[in-house]
Image (tube, rainbow, N blue to C red):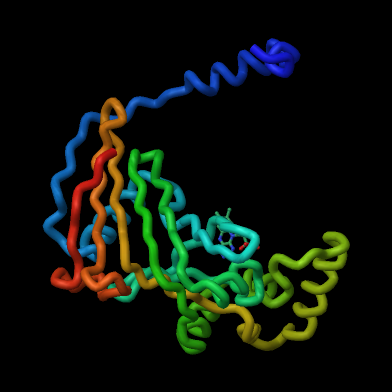
Length: 232
Ligand SMILES: Cc1cc2nc3c(=O)[nH]c(=O)nc-3n(C[C@H](O)[C@H](O)[C@H](O)COP(=O)(O)O)c2cc1C
């Protein structure tokens, strides 16, 4: 043991050892190679996640730039044969990263049900019309918040942001809040999706569905995808 380790307080060492020993055993389930399209499998898993989890649409989106990868949670707001849609500020850190590097990864961390879905795909902005339709569905407070926030930019204090919100509330007091042009959706069109099912003794089942030509393909077209089982 080196000097540094000896200097580690006993309580800290006990905590580290407790962390190393922390272990949840997964259930004894088996998955077969799915005879369904990526759209069909994700739809079923999403329904099952909805029954088990509070916010199954919370997903991690990973982007990157010259400084390295970056990941954060966003909410899934649309899913169909074209892909996965989330909404954000196009001028945020993630928006700028996607503009420069449109390849992104998604993770649905459904570990409370011993599952995970991973996606690699190409992110493109949805149409202005699609963003308008979703923006109109949002509660007014969220619309004002989207308009007030220069997401990912520093701000001197909470008071400055609150004042901006009050200004916008006054400006649009008797009108609908217009969607800011820099706020809208991205659709992630997958070329890879992995379905992961935890199993006893960490012998997990993993199925990787890959688009046959390596490019984004319709998720409901079985002929465009091939599936393999991966080792845990
Ligand atoms: C549960 C949860 C849901 C979130 N949903 C969104 C979302 O749908 N859109 C969004 O822009 N940020 C969302 N956020 C905030 C992001 O994680 C992140 O802080 C923000 O988008 C700024 O990221 P960026 O600076 O990398 O662009 C959510 C955070 C959490 C914890």
